[in-house]
Image (tube, rainbow, N blue to C red; front, side):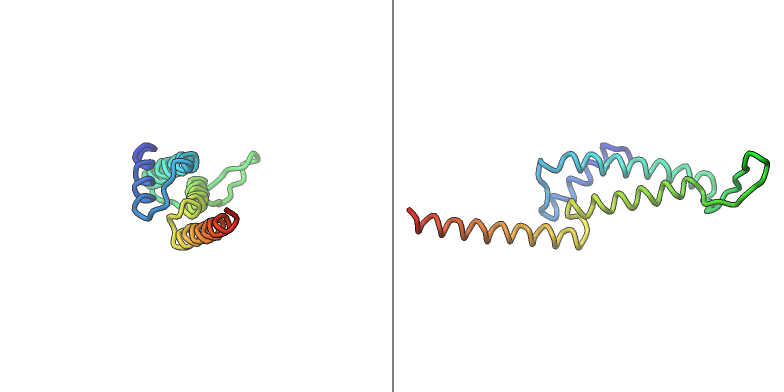
Length: 120
């Protein structure tokens, strides 16, 4: 999926769970970039036969079996994306955290309002 499509999907998901704010656009853009890169690497890895290991030839001609660099890129993108998904409230734990922070803010503002009424 392209970056723009990911961005729309992320915003739609955030709207669906109630965590969208304009202030999160930087994080949304970054997550869309990560997911787009992941999709590109996934397509290339799939086109090359989904090999987990590849043979790497060293400068002296020795050959070693190593983890496919495309797989490493995929795993790194997934790890980074999960961090952003969580921060944007798009994982169960991230959503719980987002709503618990909102409840704390509501309690604080209710207390502030009550104190203000007492001082007025």
